[in-house]
Length: 113
Length: 113
Image (cartoon, rainbow over all chains, first blue to last red; front, side, top):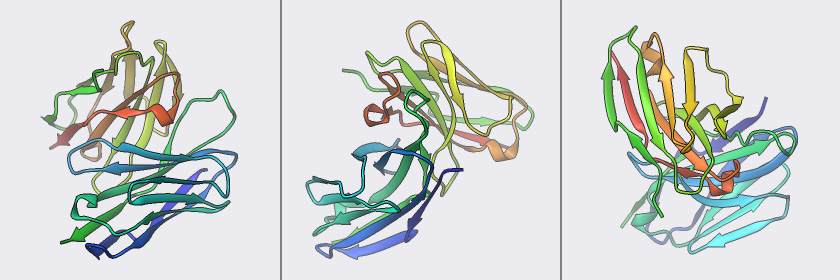
């Protein structure tokens, strides 16, 4: 069964203090690893998809990387508006199957001004 | 371009009752997936519908059922509600099930008392 573990559960940073969020996964036949941002009372908002080990993607202060066992979401010089829960999810199985995502529990990030 | 709309936003039901949650897909999307998100947890896959047919199901009992209509809107029905069914129910639409194109709604917060 596919498993996704995110750490730490919660992270408090000072504005400008860079850090990384971890996502470890165990799947059979990874088709994609996804990062989402979720604000309180809202649905997840898509950030990145990574498909193969060594791949990296960037968007503003966020950079996602992927290895064969884990993914990191690096946050450079965060701002208070980056405060949210960050969810990691994997899609696995044969091409053509449904696009079920298996999510981790999420990491709650708080950035203090 | 409209987003995904879910109704109602909040709902309180009594144990043993039945509930229907509704989702209007984003324009042009033909696939709808439903997820259950308990407090402090990541979303869990319930099932997916593609062109009005169920296209994959997670580990949820048969009292969770769904429908997709010709206009690609969808319903989630839950019978014989239990206290553990209290959660945020998320609907996500996409084109042909591509999670990179998932658009999530803001969810329906269901409380079972």
